[in-house]
Length: 113
Length: 114
Image (cartoon, rainbow over all chains, first blue to last red; front, side, top):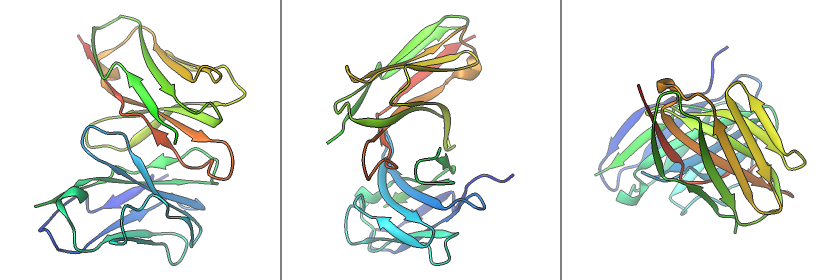
């Protein structure tokens, strides 16, 4: 079956622009995660959803970052007023349950100029 | 705060060599530990998952060990092949309510030369 997909794969934004990154999880996966991976670093946890409920947003770096999963399937990570330090790869992962193996998408590479 | 360190940062070996990648973590109260592979432009692929009660896991040419008390794990790759070239990431989840949250190391960039 299809894996986790993310779009766009690449995004170039001017500083101050708003961006929206989409994640399509594996069908039937209850849990969805967002991670941020800066160049040369490991991924860092941003937020976690169980179905449509955002149960943990402790990793979101500022109030410019907002994530939603309104119908418990597709999720969108929105970054308002982008800054250069937001440049990174944003990875989405899904799993059957919160403690199950997480399956990662290919990521969206965001470059803020 | 849990911190994960991977040594070495990069490794280059000739094809056929056996090799070991190292991972250490500061808080031994982990729920599980995973090794991932990341290829350029692609997402992470889970290779092996070791529960905190386990000592090792094996899959084909890969063997991962876990010493929770000392905060260490190793990934052993036997008879390396050029197709093994990738970045290998170690990640842990902590025990308790946040046992879904992966904390990653920076990874080891492996190059296997033909």
